[in-house]
Image (cartoon, rainbow, N blue to C red; front, top):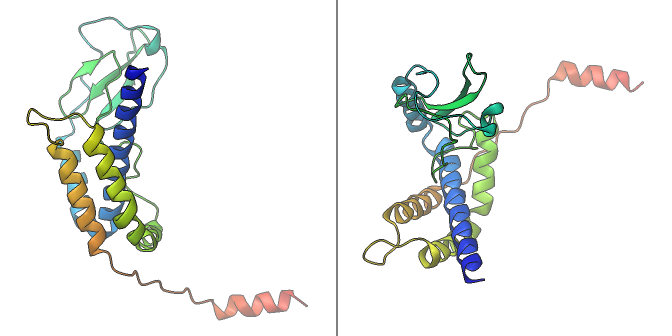
Length: 197
């Protein structure tokens, strides 16, 4: 029972950390898009060629099909054995086992949203700003502070503190977005009126 409670607390901590990272990523998309573009360019510059299947270890039944994987890992098929393996696009490390997804990896978060979606994000965060600052962020901070693994001095992990600080600062910088109303084309409006008769 106690181990189950500990596992649930740890799991909720991981969920909270991922939620904070995702929120911070979305905020940066419209608060600092140039910095995000530079980060993507640096990642692309660090990309290495596929090293081929692993030289050590053996594939298992889990390697019989392609699996979704987080960046900077990719899943490729060995043409000789038809088995799928995982390789790191920056270190050229190849392995049969699926890599663990660390918090803050950006997996599952759209890196290049559709045109106009950043305006929707800006409006959403503006409407939720007070709730996030007063309720959600303190709740995440309290849970992580209580249940996250502590360092040797018994305090919260520095990475978690930094994410909380960055998210709070990003939310406080938010200003009300300007929404431009689309003007209807007069020709289209006239044609629409004629179709009614």
